[in-house]
Structures are given as C-alpha cells and as structure tokens.
Image (cartoon, rainbow, N blue to C red; front, side, top):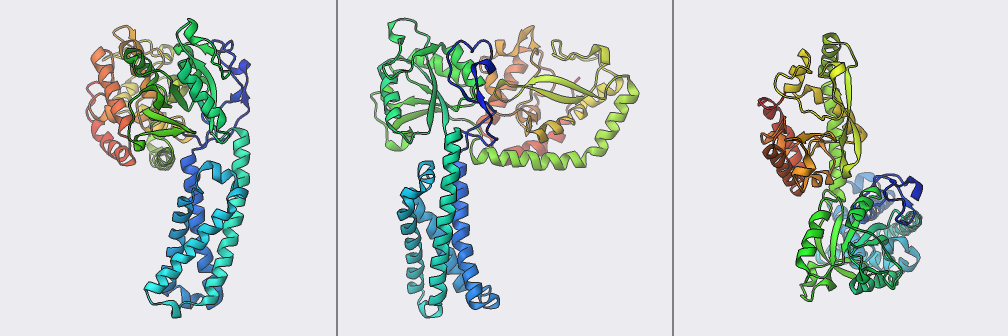
Length: 502
C-alpha cells in the first residue's frame, strides 16, 4: 500500500477506459497513487514525538542553566534520551500510532498525557538507580514536563486535523476489489461495514460464475464483472488490495485466480474464514476486523518506496551532472552522422502497465526508426547508423533516460522497459511468458539484474525472454538498496560484454 503523490480530482465514468465505462464503478480519485502509507505516516509522527521530547528538554535546560553548563553534561543528555525513547515506546504501547487514533486526537488526549507522564516516570527511575537525583534541577524538570507536554498536545492536535482532512479526501483509504461471491463475501463485507473506522473502500465485487451463486450479495455489492474486468479495473483505478473470497476447498480455481492476479502491484489477501484450518494469530494480517491470509504483498512499499525514490532522484541527478559532457558529445556525434533529431522517443510499458515515453539518443536513420519496436534490431541491421552501432553496443544511447528517472517514470535499477509491440519468435512477450506483466509491479529501470547476469540486448527467442523475466522477478522479490548499489556497480562490467547488443 503505497502512495505519496498529490490528490487529484475524482475519476468519473467518462474518464475510465471505454471498456470499463459500463461497469457502474463508483467515482474515485485518479492518480498513480492517492493512498498515503499508514506505516510511513505513523513513522513520521514517531519522529516528531521523539524530536519534541528531546528538544523541549534541551531547550529548557539551556534556558534554565545556560548553554555551557548543559551541552557538556552527560547526565542531562542521558535523561533527555530516556524521556525521548520512553515517549515513543509508551505512546506505541497505548496504541497512539494507528491512523484511527491519529485522526481522533480529542478522544486520545488522556492517553497522550498518560504516555508523557510514564516517560517522565522512566526519567525519575533512571535518576534513582543512578543515584543522580541531587544533581538534576527540579526546576528544569518541571519546565521540561510542562513545555514538552504542551508541545506534544499541539503537535498531535495539528496531526489530527491533517489526518481528518486526508481521510475526507480518501487519501487514507485503501481501494479494494473482491473476487468471489456468496456467503463468505457477504460475511466479510458486513464486518467491514460495521467497522466505521476501517480504511477500506470497496470498488466492486467480481466473479466469473454467471449462475445463481454469483447473484448480488445481501450487503449491497452486486457482481459487476469477471476476472478480466477485475484486472482492468485494478490497473485503471490503481487498486491497493485484492481480496480473493474463495474457499480453499476449490484448490484449482483458487490457484488459477491467484496466479492471474499475481501480476498486479497490489496486496492480495484471502479471508481466514475461507479455510477451516486455524493458524497461529501471528500468521494473520487484518483488514479492519477481518483476519486475512497474505498471498502476495505489494513489492517496494512504505519506507522501501521512499528509500528507492530518494536513491533514484539523488543518484540519478548526480549521474546526469557527471555524464553531461559525455551526453553532449554523443548528441553532437548523432547530429553530425545523419540528419534528424538527436533524441528518439518510444512508448514503452512502465509501472502497472502504464505507457511511458522513454528517451534515447537516436541510433537509426530517421526514415527507418521503429517507434513500436515491431522488428527487433539484429546484427548488421541496415537501419542503424554508424554512430548508432557504437552507442547501442556501449548503451550510451540509454543515457537520456536519466531524465525519465528524474521525472519519476523510471528507476535507475529495475526490469528494462520493453516496447509495446516487441516480439520473440513472432509472438508478443506476454503470449510467451504467462507471468510477463508481473515485471511491471515496480518501475522499470535503466539497468537491471538480468542485464548484469548476461541477458542484455536482443530478446528474439523464447529462452531469452523467459530468462529476462525470470531474472526480473527475482529482482522484484529480493529488492534492497544494497542490491541496487551492487547492480549499478556491476553494470559497467556488463557493458563490456556486448555480443548480444546490436
């Protein structure tokens, strides 16, 4: 569940793809993501609480004793650290970091004050065991308690107003679709409707069965489409959660459905009531009051999303500055070698199958450029210019994609984006590899795991595209910042092996 981009106006049926306009979908915000991650939000509030507890103690100490006396005093620093750590621990124990509690400050003010008092009690206990009570100023402690408590109250009240505004705009609600109709779906939806604080908004219920078993549930959500419709809706509306409400007893059907859903960049859950087997409570996640079994998790979410975004923008900007002389030289060579524009724009699949326009240095004669890549470039291809052969072999033609990284359309590292009509053995890639579109659960990248493992360049055979997808999926499942750094470090060595790059 990720989402860190500005809210946009509601999506009306007229704005939907024509294939979905007749499904009776509710109006929802349209953007690449409107949901703000609760994990990130609660983390930011934790940072704010820690900072207020620590800074209020330091400021009161400086005002009470003077800077020279305090900044070198280890005892005061220890007490401030104990209070700051104790504050976030106590507030966490009291349940004050959930989105619901953050949005209802007025109800939780007594618990907030209780947490602050408990943190100060920890300071008193620490001073007692260190036998340092006589060395600490009671006046400073009193001022710190009042200032810190006041600042925490103001901060939480402001956060409550902000969270309520975000809740009204829908930015704290996860968009969910349900596959499967019947008693299991009815019971689950009824529980979600009874929980007024649930952060779920159900877009619709889908089922491929057209018989009486797939009629409208009693709770008011009628079947609005099939599994194919669900996949299209999930992509068009950027759904955050897919609930597969099918009994585990129907193993084959459950397997077939979840396999097709696994290509979506969304969390996929199975209600615990779908099976009579009772697992350890630690193995369940919860959607409101409903226990769920996790089938697939959205990759690179929450803090991982932020870390990767910062990594891309920071390193991408540095690379753009460092490589600007090289890019200028390549642009000049392209211009002098053949007539036409320096840059070539090509539509490719991006995150969530969205079309993006990727920038490259032009490597073909202008009247022979293939914008859809319906025909792969081969060795000695007459469409490629003299300069084009060199920059394609060395991947210098890819350098303008750093602008795509800065714009947020690409990552530095990820599955390489393919042109929409790219084929192997006269068949589209998704016709050869069933899990092909699972590559698009994350942003595509300039370089990737497949490229440094030897699967760079031409993908004209079934084996090559299968290996490319296999490595891309491995990267998605095992992503980390260190993994990205390793791939970036190995990319120059991979470029030396250019036998498959034409």
